[in-house]
Length: 509
Image (cartoon, rainbow, N blue to C red; front, top):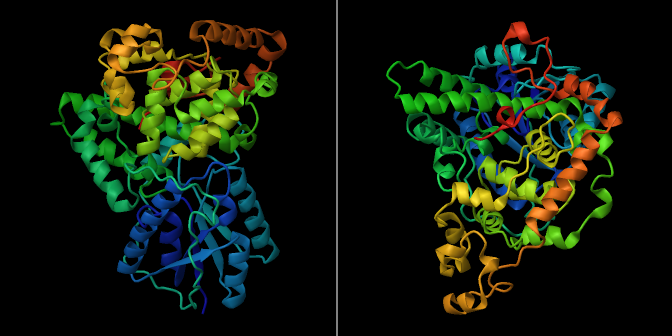
């Protein structure tokens, strides 16, 4: 029996799924998901990611069953699984979406490509995001993004003809066998397309009214942000269907002004989603190396493990930072401004390299998307060479976005006993105040690891000294050509911007 294999990776849905639609049109289909232990043992993987995928696969299995198909779950190296399947029952071709993942998945795809070539077996890959494979520079990128987002969605198959192939019975390994930690945030979002659609409709119809002005504060952001990011990351929803659903809502003349303003802002950030992933697609090395190699050596030789461990434990001494770490551990999510603040604190006053910080945060973020993640880590750390240096003062962030201490007191129980007068700098409390409120600085509340003002000033000077070095500045134009934004009207696309500004690169979902 001839059949085709549809390989599901980070596209766990049946709607707007071009590989599935095409394979179903042509004949019998085997739908395959491979759990690859080597990928789950990478330092950016976490138990919460595995849990979300398992939940999403249950939805996918149910949806395929309703269409007359089935999902084959296999465990092992992808090439080995494909070889086993092909030897058991040869198939005509492999179909999947393109993936811009980490270095391990990139190398896996290279091996799959070679395996297919060795057997003269076609492997058809389809675009999932507005990312262009093989792109050398950004001149026409925006136009291509718009063309994809305006195109019709891939039709949901009315019926699947399941390939009559013997099932694998591979046991699903537990998190221990995959080298994943035991922690799974108890308040994290749950996976699956049904959950994703519910979140999407709730945002479009109700919560988008709070998007504008609500996404910066960690108090309002959990409901003001769309909260769609994990469903896009793991492909429970397609980016195109979210874009088109948002535009359809904006076309409603009766849409309230606040919702219209919120959805306009949200649409801009959907564009930036693909803009950042394109950076990693164009230059995979930025997962491990500075985007601007002139910054090599800036922090690498001065790693302070004590600083990193304190940050990961939420014991930096700055309440806003430590509260964000506590929220991450419980929910797997914080809003973008607080993410930027965490990386800024790590990169400047704590002077940590972005790579180990990024590995930790990748495990903490349920919505970890490699392309966005590593681009943002470098941008916030000042190593891209094309972005304006941004430094977030954690005391000022608390004053601006948690002036009454509701956020830090929720996530740091000891702060509930700290008087308002010492809310932003509790380490300065006199001993008699500590005794009166029952909080011991250095025990219940950490003492700041460093002098914030002094270390931040020194860090900025070091970064700016490199930025102003003629040899470093000379490379900037080539980086702009590869990675710089062209988010402007078509007639202006040929005029590159020298740098991306903070307003252009905010990314909230």
